[in-house]
Each structure stands twice: as structure tokens, then as C-alpha cells.
Image (cartoon, rainbow, N blue to C red; front, side):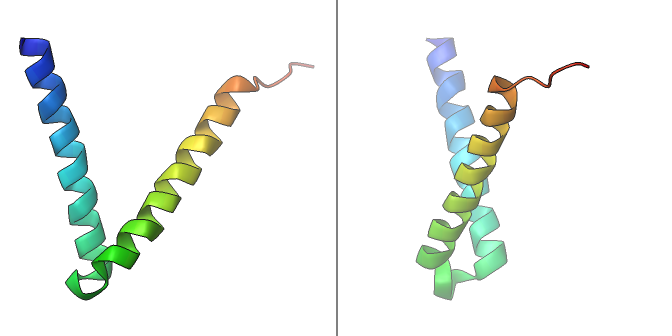
Amino acid sequence: MALLRGVFWLVLFIVLTFCFVVLFEYGPHDFANGVQKEYARVKSFVVKQTETIRKPKKNR
């Protein structure tokens, strides 16, 4: 049960941090558009990082 509570708090922290960043960058008047832009940025970052993990660099 403690693991479930810990995961819940971690997810809540990540969501609230994401919302704070969007509010700080775009303001409350453009929140919905800012969420879409930041989500695309985060998604592209994660995809780029996972591609570099999957393709190890070749040693010469």
C-alpha cells in the first residue's frame, strides 16, 4: 500500500510541475495551447533519448 501511495504522490508531483511550467511559460490566457506545445516538446525529448539508448555507439 505504501508503494501505491508513493507512486500516486510521484505522479501528482510530475503533473503539477508540468502545469506550473506551462503556466510560467505561457500564462493562464494561453494554457491549453501551452499544454499542447509542452507535451509535444516532452514527447520529442523522450523519443530522442530512447532512440539513443536503443542505438549504442559503435566503437572503432
